[in-house]
Length: 316
Image: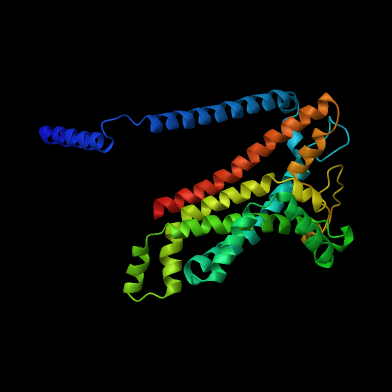
């Protein structure tokens, strides 16, 4: 057995050497070294940034800790906190999860599994790819014109349309092209043999998609959901255009859920943006501490999505 294995390895090495012309792949080696260097450089920059932020944030995190997370915004740097921004960010991400994910996945399933390969479908896919590369500030202008001004009676008449609804709809439109494209790639990666086997036993197209294609593509679809939620959680520019509060925010008690969604709002990234412009060592430390809270929140959201993805991956 060992002799056979040795002979196989020798034959494989001989074939590989013959295919390479008995020359070392110098170009491939250089490319591998360059890619490894780029990876190590990126990790080094990331570590330096994290260490710098943690050093600036440590005075706030060590002295206030949980109080900084639970406190509302304030004009005094020693009393301000991130609670309102943190809650606002989770509400906005909730809009994305409820609106953008179902619509984006449904659109991808239609384009990949139902639509014919026609000029119209190719045009739609091309436009979706272009929309995925549009700067986020452009979506902010769209949200300002459509959700804040044109749909003011729905999004929040009391604050001229600047509300959670307007912000959530804007972020949903922003990440929907990404969801569609990643979902289409996940569906395209499903082997055609799975579809053909299901059709062979008399399954309808919907049964094939529901019971075979979607479960097999679930890990890839959830990967797209992770990326989309993470981007929505960290967006700032479109929320500033659709009216996110950057200063002190008063939140009256006793409001109904509809009144809350139609009321003024803020988010953690917009708070960081506002605090970064304020002078003083206290605000600098608060900005760094808020960045740490934002990173932790994004990691928590991503961890939950990764757990779901791994569960589907093990199952299928």
